Every structure is written in C-alpha cells, then in structure tokens.
Image (tube, rainbow, N blue to C red; front, side, top):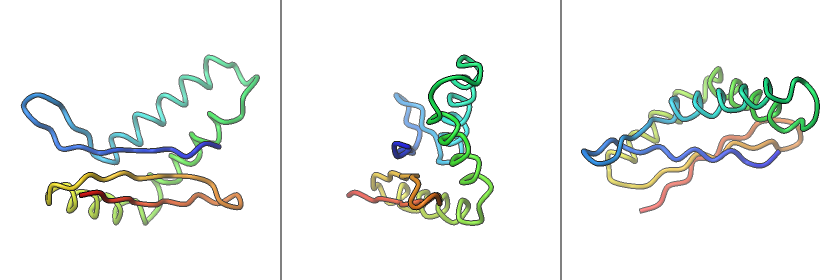
Length: 98
C-alpha cells in the first residue's frame, strides 16, 4: 500500500481548510467509492487504504495526533500526517515544517 498523506490546513478567506479527521473521512469515502466501482474485483489497495483510515479514526492515537496537528497549525506551521503499513500494522507519522 502506498502511504496516505493528509495535509490539514486552517481556513482562510480565500481557501477553505480541513482538519485531519475531515481529511481522513474524505479519503475513506473516496476509497469506498472506488471499491464500489470495482465491484470486488481487481486492485486490493483501496481496501487496504480504507481499513487503514478506519483504524486511524478509531484509534486512541487519532485524537492525540489531531490535537497536536491543531497546535502546530495554530503556530503557523505546515503539518502532514502519513499513514502507512509496516509489517502489516498501521503506522501514523506526523511531520511538521516551519
């Protein structure tokens, strides 16, 4: 599975922003639509991505990472959350840029 990258942003008058939870839910819905279009045949990646996103949203780490991302965004920093599988287990890595 390719890593899932979520880049939350604050809303500005010109550009609407989205929090980590909203981005994860949006990506999860995109995966679900792709799975429905495939009809159960073909690529397994959308299913893995869907499961990784569901696990992220249900995990106790989710709220902690969302709070941390909001804090960095409030400080004016750019934040990115990477979700990927390592040895069959979902890993969440928050990256912060000035």
